[in-house]
Length: 354
Image 1: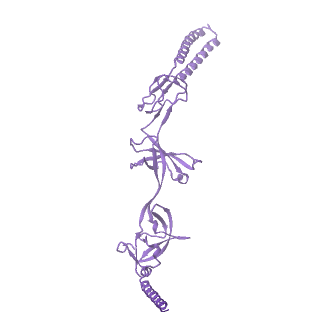
Image 2 (image 1 turned 120 degrees about the vertical axis):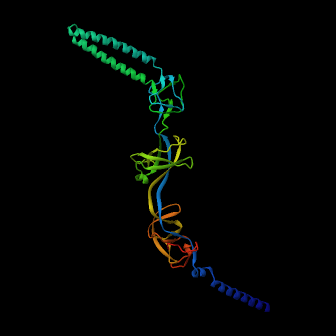
Image 3 (image 1 turned 30 degrees about the vertical axis):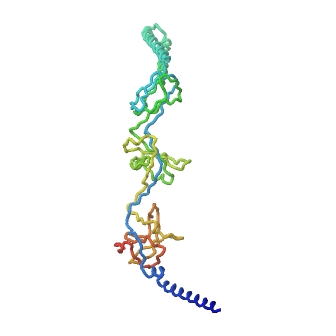
């Protein structure tokens, strides 16, 4: 019985001692110190900054002019001049098909025309002395015109057996050899201009109104650090219904051997710039159900300020109402501060513009 009584007395003593220590420690608890002592905080002084509204899209580098060389008629190649990787001038004969039958027919028509023209001259003299009827003379003249038309048609057929360079450019890899029988769908080679290159890309519909002719475009390729430039020359006059985007074409103004047709490009478009934007760190925003607030330091104390924000960047937010140049915005310890709380700045000194 005595042991139980001693145990109870000792237990009560321990509890009383613990309670006393807790009360004494409570006087110096962290929450109490925070209320009494200024909280150490970071800050941001509001100033004008440059804000760029920009987007990044994918694009493709393309030759300004590029054509697959095909022939208009089928036949056998009798002359082949497709120098792979080399430059050719516009009008250079690249491929010639067999045309002996067409040439022979043309020669026959030309001989008939010569005979008819000689006869026409003789009949013209006879007509003057009434040695020939006028109808016969006119029929011969009409026959001459028919022959001339047939000769013109024949020359067109012969020209269709020739493939000439449609513009100054470089020949790609040829797909045929001398003597190859080709048809109208056979791709002989490709010719493209490498002196002028274009950049094609698509812009989402909501940004289409920002795209203007001569707009500057910057792009990179193959994850390289080099930045190239292009200038918008045209857009499609309508939004693609399948992708809900606008196709844009720009002329590449940078000159670099690394820029080759078919290359993938990462295109950066600066849609607008505001050199007098008010930007604050996004961590300074205190979201609410109906509005947003920030904590502003005035005379060493914290004060809540409602703000209206606009665009949001990776780490900053644009403020369009609620702050002025020179305001000191608190960026740390936001959840521990109350209206009018004393502040101490992490830099060790008060902001100059507070």
